[in-house]
Image (cartoon, rainbow, N blue to C red; front, side, top):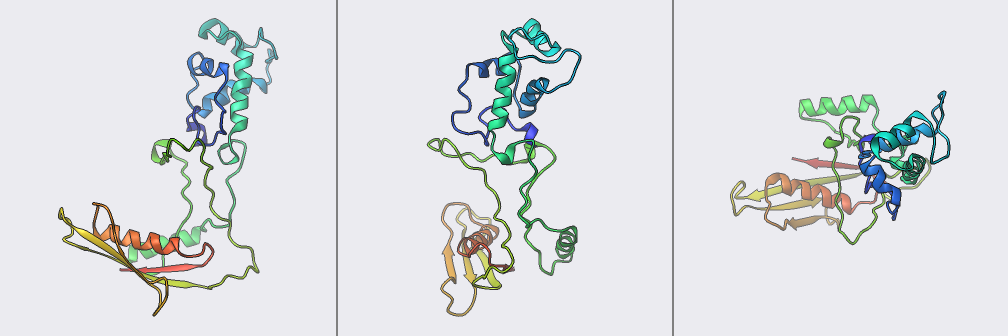
Length: 242
């Protein structure tokens, strides 16, 4: 997935990464579209061969000769170094030479199997799986679009599991949620959400869902989202829903 990310305006690039004269040459002459293309270009620096790359405009390695002769690049060495620099500026989460962020929250195979069994039987607890990594195709991932005024958005990381010995205010929280909809599937449908924790609990809520998209499922989702937004990050939560 990392290799298939776009080479330009990359989500993990720092501000002002793309402001170099050689960027246009990389795009047009070297046809660099994805991160893997930048990797292909910069790899000649480290490649061992009978005719290795040299730090020179007139480098005689096969790749540089091909770039000059067949692709119109006037200084392949500059473009090679530029590709390497762009890759080095990517934030750690997106760099190809880093391992996945280890937070201690990934479910074991046994826990995943238990979840699958509970879904098939229609009963039992399903433990939320925070792992959303894909190893298939970039087209199956979501791209997040941000307001134009935000020039840079830091990549999201999951919180680490709390270390042993940390005192958590509440050991375990059971939250009952419900979503209901009047005139469901009709144009004038209206849904609401309810959250109940315990008698007299300040976090008990009844929510009127805004907007023009209403259904039982939306009411239920709003209830779950709102109750989690108002719960401390490290409190274990069991959501009971119909």
